[in-house]
Amino acid sequence: MVEVQHQRPCSRLECKNIASSLQCPTCLKLGKDSYFCDQDCFKKAWPTHKLVHKSLQPTAPYDPFPTFSYTGSLRPVYPLSPMRTLPDSVPRPDYATDGIPHSEQRLFRTTNIHINTAEEIVAIREACKLGRKVLDIAGAALTPGVTSDSIDALVHETCISIGAYPSPLNYYHFPKSVCISVNEIICHGIPDQRKLVDGDIVNIDVSIYYKGVHADLNETYYVGEKSLADADSIRLVETTRESLEKAIELVKPGMLFREIGNVIEKHATANGCSVIRTYCGHGINKLFHCAPNIPHYAKNKTPGVAKPGMTFTIEPMLALGSWKDKTWPDNWTSATVDGRRSAQFEHMLLVTETGVEVLTARNADSPGGPVRRIS
Image (cartoon, rainbow, N blue to C red):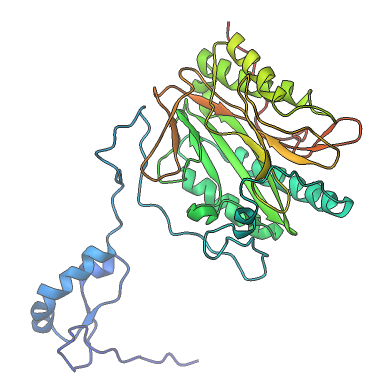
């Protein structure tokens, strides 16, 4: 086939000539085509044309809240990547377009706890197995030098591949597909351009919407060898993991939801950790968040009794220092008030006739897992 030579207009807007092969060298480096008819025309265009180069330059990393009084050493690294999109074939929850979970808001403040039908339980089990798959893929990708934004992209693309919607995306306008919380961040960390470093501990909180129901789970992982040599980080992470396991042992028909916090705080306190009080576990089914609320601290007054067919999360957040928190100006990222590290683990549970089913249980080959304490 004969190659056709295309005629290009000169890039100077006032010029009506056909461009020659003369290109702007700066645009060439930046990957943009800018052709001019001759050198004189290029010089005349320069005062306005050079402004194009600024728009093509990659934005340097920056802290969007430079005057904010951070509690620890972690800083957000912007710009954020654009909100990711999904193909039309992926079913969406009701908040996907406008950011408002209308179905949840209609039930705001209700204490009625939904009992799932047999058909709903089948769908929830399937969604939870897929949620575990997504979390395991994300957890296996954690390594020094990786950005949390790249983990977000991985979670997003994995969700698309299985036909699921990443539940955090646009939930009350949350801008990403997964929550990633590093070191002193308790929860709701927004994935950004910061590179993970050897010694970090990182929580990945995956939630998906699949066949009309939600699944929700998270784990905290050690990044690199330094974190595995940090006795305090190991004590925190393993105590949090154990607190969840001990709480799950309580779950059966007739259990009072307020009892969960007593078990968690007892184990946390015995290991020199505090229990975050601002955030709690929650009911989950066709709705992302609903009754019951599951506080993780002792002597809480939350109402409710576990009954077969209920599904909810237990997701204790523990800290090495104070249980109090401070939210960043992005209105999502929650940090410990003293900048000390925090960890979290979460499972989604089904109350059965005789006890409990851990819907989001780890697989034999799941990344992460318990680590021996350093004495």
